[in-house]
Length: 124
Image 1 (cartoon, one colour):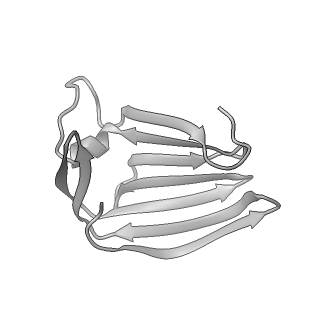
Image 2 (tube, rainbow, N blue to C red):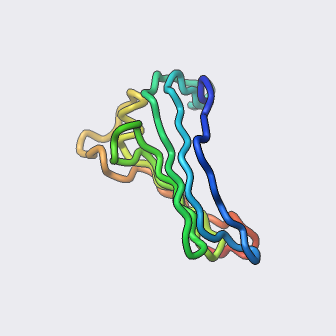
Image 3 (cartoon, rainbow, N blue to C red):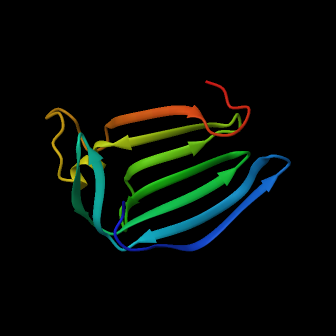
C-alpha cells in the first residue's frame, strides 16, 4: 500500500485488434510510507518520490519504476505480445525499503523475477 496519490501526468496506450499498439506515459508519486505484508504481520518504510515510465510498441508494453531523477530502475514490468507478463525487482528496491539482503548483492542485481500469463492466450 502506498501513502498518498499516484498522479498520471500523461498516458496514451493504443489497443488494436486484441493487442497493444503504440503508447507512452508517465506517473509520479511524491513518496511516503509504503506498507507490505510480511509473515503474519506488516512492515513499512518511508520511500522517496518515485516515477513510472510506460512505453509500448509492436505489441509489447514496458514499465520502468525508479526514483524520481534517477535512471536506474527499482522494478521493471513487461507485457509481451504473446500475453505473458514479466516482473523484475532489483536489490535497489530492497535498499529503499531499508531491508537486509545478501551482502554480496549489488543494487542493480535482480532479486525477484516472475513470468506468467496475463492476457488470454498467454503461455509459459
